[in-house]
Length: 115
Image (cartoon, rainbow, N blue to C red; front, side, top):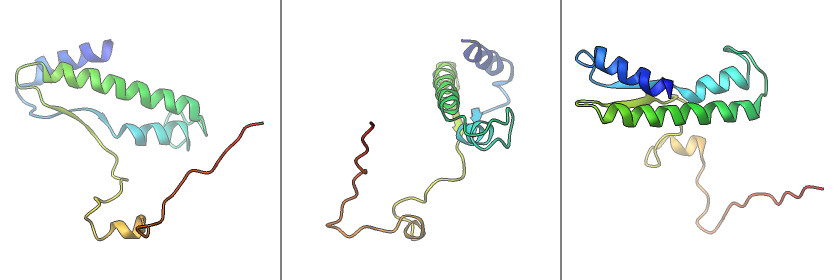
């Protein structure tokens, strides 16, 4: 995998100056903006299947590079997450986004049948 070898090379060249490596910056944002809403290159609109392949490949590459970097002496790696995530369950702001359900109420997915 080219990305893994590139990651190892970058770590060997610059590892003495960098303490935490970021493999990808906000992979979900990159995928969403590039393949669903068309704001970033390649500017595709509603390419949902392609977006799924892109994010899957990015996460596979991240995982492989993460373990390759962690295997090197002093290697620490992560990915930058998108800032658009729900607050933690203990946060008072969570109820503004996800109102709590009554204890006896459950949510089920709608029954979808295909003809």
